[in-house]
Each structure stands twice: as C-alpha cells, then as structure tokens.
Length: 222
Ligand SMILES: CC(C)(COP(=O)(O)OP(=O)(O)OC[C@H]1O[C@@H](n2cnc3c(N)ncnc32)[C@H](O)[C@@H]1OP(=O)(O)O)[C@@H](O)C(=O)NCCC(=O)NCCS
Image 1 (cartoon, helix red, strand yellow):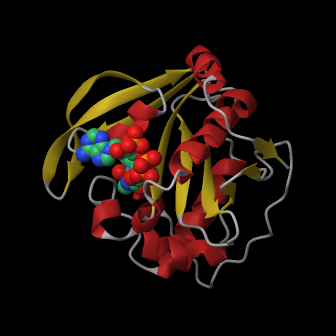
Image 2 (image 1 turned 90 degrees about the horizontal axis):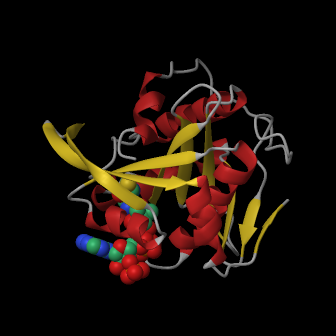
C-alpha cells in the first residue's frame, strides 16, 4: 500500500487549537473504538495524540518513507493525521493501529486498513515501522494480528496491498506472510516526480484460514 498512509491526512484542515481526543475505548464495536490486540512481542492499539512525536521520528526517515506517500513533516501534522484516523474509523471506512513493542508505550509504526468499497467487503492494507525495529519479528506478529482483525472482525473477504516493485523489503515482507502477487500495476504510483510500477498483492479470507494455521503466535483481544 503505497498511496494510502498519509495522503488523506494531508487534506485535513488544521484545527485552530491542539485537538483533544477521548482515550481509546476498548470495545467489540470497532467503529466506536479499536480493541487492543496483544501478542508475545507487540501490542496494537488505537493511535493517541501523544504518539505524534514518536511517529514523526520513526516514519519520516528516508529509508522508511522513500516508497510510501510522504508522511507528515511535523508533530502537528501527525496530530492531524491521528484525528483523521479516528474520524475515518468512526465512519466505518478505515482503521489504523499503533505498533507498540511490548514493555514500552511508544508507537514505533502503524498498520492501516481501508475499505475499497462501501461496506468493507474488500480492503487495502499498509504498514510502516521505524527502521530500528526492522527484522525484529514485530512485523510478522503485528501483521497476523491485523489480518485476524480484518478478516474476523471487520469481515473483509479480500485484502490488497500495493508495494513499489523497487521496494525489496516491502515486497519481501508481503511474500513471507503468504500474500499472493497478482501482477504489476504499471507506473501507478507517483513518488518524487517519477511514476513507479507497483506489485499488487492480495490475501483472501480463505487463504488466511490456511495461512494462519501455519503460524504459531499467542495472541489475544482485550
Ligand atoms: C515493510 C516493513 C513494515 C516490514 O517490516 P520488517 O521488519 O522490515 O519486515 P521483516 O524483516 O519481518 O520481513 C521482510 C522480509 O523481506 C526480506 N527482504 C529484505 N530486503 C529485501 C530485498 N531487497 N529483496 C527481497 N527481500 C528482502 C527480509 O529478508 C525479510 O524476510 P526474512 O525474514 O525471511 O529474512 C518495514 O520494512 C517498513 O516499514 N518499511 C518502510 C515502509 C514500507 O515500505 N512499507 C510497505 C509498503 S508496501
């Protein structure tokens, strides 16, 4: 998912004052508030305004941002993005989880899922994690939690992801969790004035039933 992460956030109007948000609600109705998804090494939870500074430092580096839509460049920009994620979740169109390594309370990345059609029958997911946490096992565990959530709770039947063909790590990550590469979307992503080819990856609900049986991770939803 190259285009989703921050494009929409750029259109959000700057609030006149620093926005305040209620704490995350732990609820089985995800539109009212995202549940906490927990595993042995990572917790996924709703974004909080206080995550803005750590997300800025984790996601605005060149190595993280070079193949995704440009992230906000300020703490205030990330705060507006976080407010936008809550509004979109409430509208039932989108969810965004903070990636929090166990033993910390610091958001070091995000997983996002957006609907591709009204009713969320199909969706697109995307992810970005601070580079110091690459290859630590947070991505595979976090992706399992998000995929369970997308298929079991949201009820998506097909989940797509787009990754620039040049993004070796992004494509490697999708391949290793079992996504199927359906083809190349030629010159489909404008980045730094250049149109990049993207691979289109998908996971179907029935694929995930099989794939997750091969995964051994203790997970829970609070
Ligand atoms: C995508 C991202 C979340 C994955 O997290 P990660 O911790 O790096 O992922 P992992 O290390 O668990 O998996 C990546 C796999 O790709 C492999 N890989 C790395 N570079 C590669 C390359 N150039 N070509 C092919 N495979 C590559 C890794 O070896 C690894 O597989 P392995 O565990 O079997 O060795 C993270 O790299 C990131 O945030 N990247 C920047 C943002 C981004 O590109 N998002 C994806 C948009 S689709």
